[in-house]
Length: 215
Image (cartoon, rainbow, N blue to C red; front, side):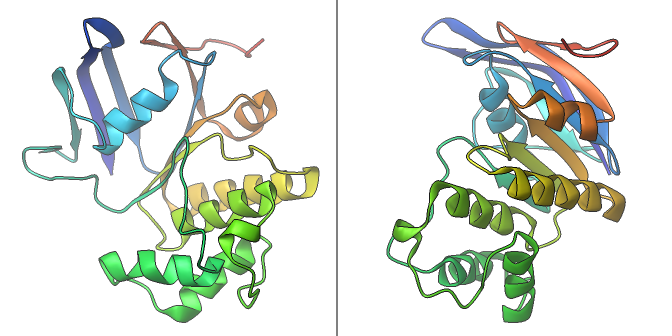
């Protein structure tokens, strides 16, 4: 699979949020995006995923243009800033509700994803009663449960302890080996250094390929 981001620009109330971005991304690789808060990383993910309309430019997958030929990226798993689940449902029931949308996976595959992130699928606590780390794990589980072609992860190790960070890094690497196209935005430089095949720096809405090690 090839994902092309061509001359993507986004303005909000006259302010340049994304400034003429061009990327060529392919399956089986992990792409890292680093930058300060407000630099445009989350907005870039929103633009690429189809969650946000562009001012100009286009995003295409294997030649199919987003918002023209397709409404959303096919086979997308995503975690993005301020993502939330139903507070009154258990983790398992939350994922069951989400799985009904595409009808791709059964209960066993949902439970497998929950186990992969180190949680118990039979835990009767509701999402509201989860710790921050547990919430992050279950949100990652929903992103990977359908074995997506494209995996887009905004701050995947946020609020996780060291053990959970290692679990998530292993999962990301496994997804790459499975053939997924993976995009990561992270403040954790170790995530980027250890996992990514290519690194891009996001600053003032521009995206520039990082040559050499990140500082």
